[in-house]
Length: 114
Length: 446
Image 1 (cartoon, rainbow over the protein chains, first blue to last red):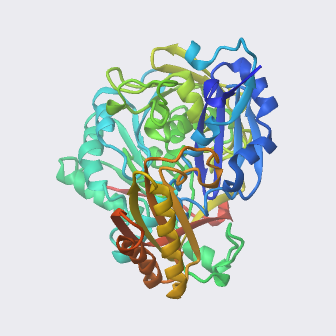
Image 2: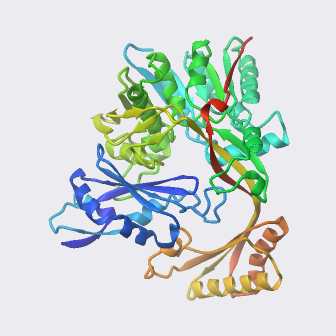
């Protein structure tokens, strides 16, 4: 096994509604969904986002497209028009998720190996 | 409309979107419908403020340009035009559209005005509890606006009455795209699976170029061609609720399975229960399949009954933000920025400037990921200090910004001060029973 950033095996998009952010995680290879489900637990994701998230973290699954969706409440400083943050939408929450470290088998095909 | 499909183009994703790619869609897309989402949470409240200043305004600030460059050419080609560009004042927006179309040689166009999403009086009369846990009577600040997200019903009524240009206010984003399919195929408005298919196509279109390669590139991991010339997405929706998402040849961007997956998850919470004014969508089993270059086939959406309540977006003026920035560079940049921040906060305390919330960012280091920035992130060559505060008074907000300017006389070699003071428009939500929101369609004729 070796440790790589999530960026090597998945892409991410984040969005906002009010003070809630969602971070969708999509493995490039659908068969890597199980690996992500094992490691991207609610607790570890909460830890990764640290103080950015004041409310709950919930994980959902899109089985048809083999993707996970994390919903982070009280995570946008009061929402896009009230927040003092530069990135009021949390657009860059996606890129923070890309730095999440995952353990992968040594023989796994990474995105740039393809 | 061609046999067996209705073709709907997305002409806009928000109030300041680029118009050029939508012109391409009108000219080359052989569309049946062009639908424009012109609103976001933030933009609607800004439109409300414009209406408060002038009761004849409050519709999309681009409206004249949209009508000249998109609506009129669409009408000329027999494309039906649907937009929530009426924003905070759909009646005035529809009148202005009608007037301009007449000037442009289309006096017979049937323009529909969809009104009734403004529920401010209702929210105030009932003193409804908002998502911040408070009722308007308990809040320190007054409400600016309250708009219910409305769905496809008034669009379908407009189409039945022969409208070819439809102007509304807070029509929910995906509903703008679902309505034409539901109307053309005469889908029963309680056939939830069919509506779900149309709503998912709408969801893939509603963010405009997000659906065709925007907000996706991450070189070298994800390469998207010709982003400078990004095209808008089009949906061919079929009678069974499936659809093909595609874009015009010769435009930049990409419509592929990866990009459509990213857009499918965008701004969704529980994928089994995506609440819209028209139905509850279950996206869990939606699948995407690359049919050909830049063409993705979508199927598998399921639906359930629509919610009994409509979501209302409530705008509240909540004081002011004052903000100042100053740059440091070279050896010791971060230390000097930190010293400047310390100086400013001490002086604000000394001067008795009251802030409700204060934020300090070191742009280049931690301004985006904040306290979740890795502790071992390398120190950058340049750091831009940013102080931002939310204050109850404009004077306090201005004082915060001004103190950042005084950094010119504080920590060494800080340069390039910028400062701004602006009103805060917070947004909260509430739920109202759908039967309490009475939506009206008026057809403006000749």
